[in-house]
Length: 211
Image (cartoon, rainbow, N blue to C red):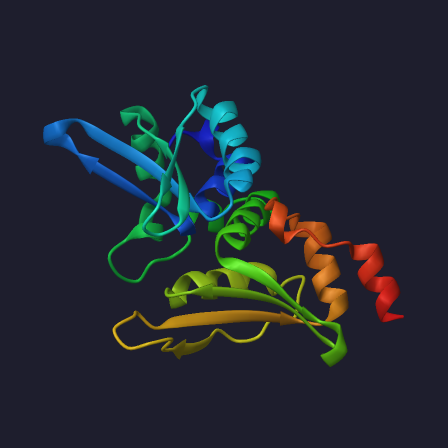
């Protein structure tokens, strides 16, 4: 992987690929990098600008009526190959992990990866009447969440990686990682800076309501 791509923007895109895929068919010269989302505005505001800035191309939007999901697709062999070299074991068949260049990267690179990953596979769980304020990550891959926990443990008090849980029969078990407390939620939002339009919170208002 070229050094010039070891950047904050690309680490965000790799994290966001938690809800995405790479596909190639050499015989038919098909190379795809695809991001999936229920929110088209997220793909427009968080994924496309980074793709355009890094690779100077635009992808294409599609809508899957069967799954009610939008997807943003980049059909470029060059871009596919750059992603392939960057994801390492992140999309392996087994024992998926965070890429080493992100593990060994700067705090900013790690933070952007977490931001992209949270936008894809995380959410805020905020129930003031129960005094329950949480950041939650959900994933079928234990080692990815363990790597994220290792990143966050220097600044936050995280749970252990919880699970596996079985949501329903025939579905791959999943794991969760939690961060509890209003102060930690606010700190996470201010430092990690999620991009997803549906995952924005008013930190000042949240703190005032809690006082």
